[in-house]
Length: 433
Image 1: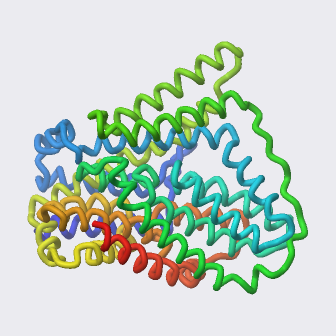
Image 2 (image 1 turned 60 degrees about the horizontal axis):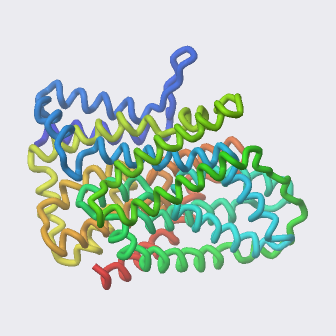
Image 3 (image 1 turned 30 degrees about the vertical axis):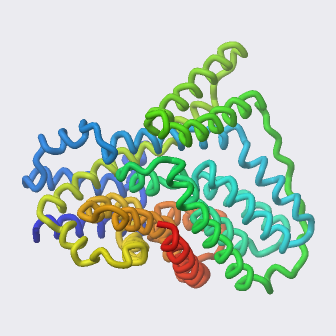
């Protein structure tokens, strides 16, 4: 157990340090994210020293089970492709512009509208996509309007990482943990809808109280118009995303796996766009951009983490943690444990780790632990910047836009909101599951 824990711990620590201090590796013209390379090397080392049997690994990867990481990756990447495509055609930038214009010259209205729009969009797409799309827009607008962008950037980030709990597709951590325990799309929604809304309202109130004095000054500038250049492609994207969401909701009742629904929807997008481009005799630039931006790095990252967790499980580490956490007050124990763990090893590795930790539990206790861990994986994203890769990327974007927002500022504005949102969400959840 000592060797497996040591290698796993060193790998995760090195990964976090790489994200903080050398996020990308450049080799001539090629550039790759360092975090997945480090985890991949850790997994290879564990295989090399015999902590994980190669045949056992292959068996787990081809097994027809809910926890199969390949199915989970297909589901997440395909859903991300549908969302990224809408971003490529300008849909989210268009909505961002409309939101900023709706506020007129009132920062308070802008704050409210932004929080609402980001919340709604995140429910049906992905927290990462919305954050990465809206952040540049907010920075440009704030500079032009001569207002402080921090209240709106913080509101955007927190809204996205709170409402990402609403649907199973809102966050890769939701997909991994919930799918691993066979929770269907609609069953998930019926449990998580109320806790998500409750924590979102609490987060908004706390944020408004924190920034209320800064929101009193009027807005001087205006937002530059954004137009959809290719409306037919936008319609195609919206129809397919909407259809996919509906099929995900009803699929559990007709025995249609979510990963199949997502895969077919993504394939339909490719066929429709390529057909449209062939008819119009134009290059499918939006589709090409979508392919380039898909989170391919998650494939080696998640699979490598899966190897590391297999090693920890085989030596009894995950069973020991499960025994230590116990079965009483599972919602709170697993919610808080995942919330804190995400800020030590990041939320995606934490989600992979917690699946075997939850496994020894049974019945309603197991279900409580599953939903508690999902809550922690989402809300842990805004306790510290380490909580999620989106937080690190977001901080990097702010630096590029000359927004002064340090790691200490992140904790100063977000930590209190994260704790209060967590307590609210887990309390409401405890009455439901």
